[in-house]
Amino acid sequence: MRATIPALLLLLAVTACSSTPAAAPGHPDAQALARAISTAADTQKSVAVDLDLGVTGKAVCRRDTTSARCELTKPGGQPVTYAFLPGASYVRIPDDHRAPGARSWLRLTGDGAELAKPMAEVAERIRDLSDPRKLVPAGASLASAKTAPEGVRYEVAVPAGHSVLLSVDGNDRPVRASIGAVSADFHDWGAPVVVDPPTPDQLAEFPTLPAPK
Image 1 (cartoon, rainbow, N blue to C red):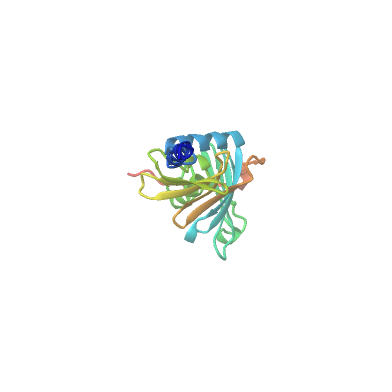
Image 2: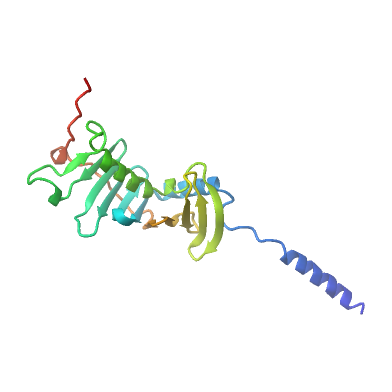
């Protein structure tokens, strides 16, 4: 009987330890997650991103920390190319949407930007969705975090009222993000990328709206 008492005490101790809830994987809050992703993106310097934009189409982007080049394709249509550089955004109009001999690129910022607004809104959406540093916005909170084969999967509640489902690897690099029917897959981290602006002979300008009288 005496021999069973130490064994019983040991069993109770093990049971008490095992009943302690395991710590949640990953980062403790959305702010820490956002900082970790930004640090990883700045360290890697570049990434390739495949975007599924639902009815808008699909885009393939290659970007670094300041610039990006993306091609948007809709079913049955020719690709629309965007170039995002510090202070300026450009779009290349497909051949079947412009007159023969017309210059192929338009500037979406600067003079005439009001006329370019519809295209600029699509461009800004593509640019922002392809930027891993914008996946967790200010004011977001973590709804859940769980271990996954790629690393950790988070559900992030954002102030706009929806959730971002976000998977990151062991180095805090995003692997996949989805918001409803829209998704982004990140890969080829750190590979070289070059984003050049259109040359002057390729660039057309939107007409400037007349000043109101």
